[in-house]
Length: 238
Length: 140
Image 1 (cartoon, chains in turn green, orange):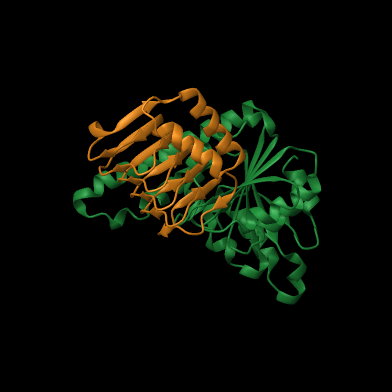
Image 2: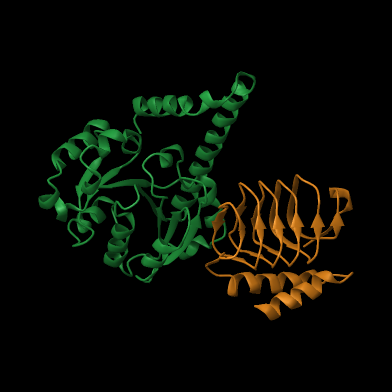
């Protein structure tokens, strides 16, 4: 992430929720919050180092509920079928619905139910990977809890991050959620098969992503008919 | 799975424990029988589960609890707030206080730990204890 973006992300992180702390605990709340964030980042770095050492590629996928994260992952693993020994870690507040969908494509899945937690964090991933023989995998996908806000607080230690939005969320969705796009390598704008019917201004969405993060790759996809999934895989260097 | 659980339960309930056999059975149980998420009957407020996790009937779980991976918790057991459990087997009718962090542990049936703040790794825990000092801890 460029230094300017990193500073802005840090500034926003520091501002959020500390105002809830009463004066007596304000200093402690700030110190604790910073320490926890630092711990998460250190753990994420450690995870990435371990995965890279083992030659495992890792990608995390974030986006709102219903944007099409699972559908895109289904298409990717179907397309890659057999090329990699793949593990998909799915985050949801409850249920195993997404993991079950992906498992149908003969890929190993692990479900994390975060309960009240609105995002996965590095500790979740560390615990899961700690419990696995990493020599058995070449590729790990992490599908985060459906949310366009919380996942920006927690790095997971992956090589690349994809943020998925869909045109059904409206053309302002990227402009309204800049944080995740600052932190992502690829923005996927999904459900373009509905473009004609919805009339969403897709050019605005692309321009918003590019102006928030000039380095981001933007790909228009339809997980439904498979359009540009191949291109996405190419950008992921898989 | 029931048979393995019973064998383990018998082994850890004895005065002299056969650590090697316990480890072997625990490994077999966790790796071959504990799969996916079977968490339908718990009582509590949305803890975090990292599969594989299997819960028995009427397990009570406190706030801000993280369970998994590789955890079995038996019927009518009660887990306090801010507890984290991984790679562990907890038998029936166990009660654990707040802020326990357990990894690679077995807790014998009917154990009651009426105190808070405890970290346990690679051990069998048993007894009725109102403090850490009263706890029976056997390293495995």
